[in-house]
Length: 325
Image 1 (cartoon, rainbow, N blue to C red):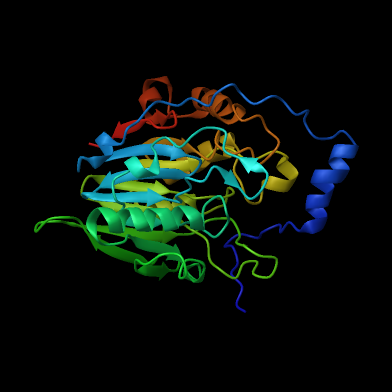
Image 2 (cartoon, rainbow, N blue to C red):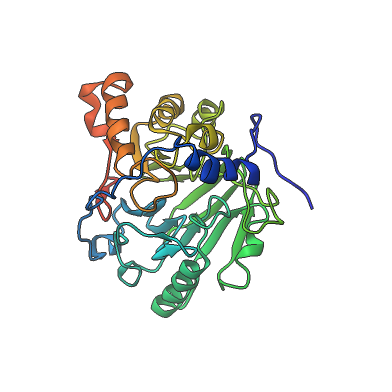
């Protein structure tokens, strides 16, 4: 079985590292004391009506899931509407828009095969919802070898791409313009079972539409190629970057960015707007759920584009819709 590798050297984590973190560090008192969850991750009611419009917009559903309207297409990124991941990780805040109130999705983007980014139950529901509403299922764009996980679940076409490879989808209507989707490198890894580590590729997706260019980084550690992404697919108007799941740093740094690293990545991308994601929905690591946006805001004020660029920091509430016009 072929195995994929990162562009930068990668400090792989294995069962012994998990044992050190979950058991030895707990016994030794090295983990941060568990704090009660924030009473509520910021959330606004959204009945999905605005998403039904063809006007360009972006809506945060939670974690790494967004619904975008670009080129007239309805696009879902790493869709997870599940109430829990596995047996013990419960959702901290309800999805920003109920799946049944979401317009039928035209394109589903998957960044990699981890369960908090590729939820088969959600994909089954999205597929059925689209077929019921308009008679056709979404198109699924995935990295190489990720398609094998979807084939028994979805009915729509599955398109696999490697890094820097693209696929065009035409928007609705006789004059619909093509939207280009390009898979770009990501610093991460892949696994769904104990036997398929790194057997499927991982990557971020760039969406180039008539209204502008959006970049969804998926799940990534900091690496040296953000500037290259910006040069090859830019200018990027909206960069959706992860700011959470970073503690303990010794374990998470090769695979997840903290808020400050995400800020550095944003500057290297040369993007116009920073859209925060990957925080507040699932408690996957040791930092308090509400810490990432506070740390990122502090970084932005000290190192970002400057106070005059406050409107470029999009720290959305779950369920919030922003115009991309």
